Length: 184
Image (cartoon, rainbow, N blue to C red; front, top):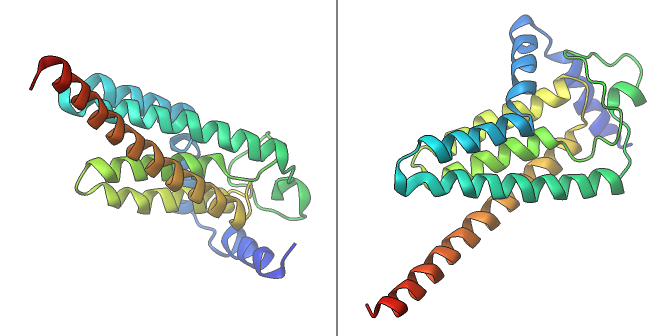
């Protein structure tokens, strides 16, 4: 493994230790789960105004696509988590999943959510700060390397833009056919 990546891992995992980060690491583990994002997408669909309900569906589509991509990578790149592979790794939360840690599903999920919401809401871009904090918390927790969270972030952002683009194209196509049929 690259020395730079190991140094970054240890700097984040051990160099930033404090009670506030421990608390945030615990909370971000729950917030960054796919189940939490799926519940959030369902919430958006159920409770947003009629014209905004599609955002929940687009987010759901992105979660399904990115979840599949992460699954393919995790089964193709069997990279052992740092808390298993390295000695003296500080774990802020207990993780039992010792399968492949590449890429980070939490980073993918949080960056996907930030990307989709930033495409629909004016201040949605602010969610990228939360997504970055969630991604870094995975390194702080000792369950991912920096490259794991960077790869997850890239998958999340790319998937987010692809599903938003596809949804907008489908909407335009749907409107075109409705106008053709109705004679407008």
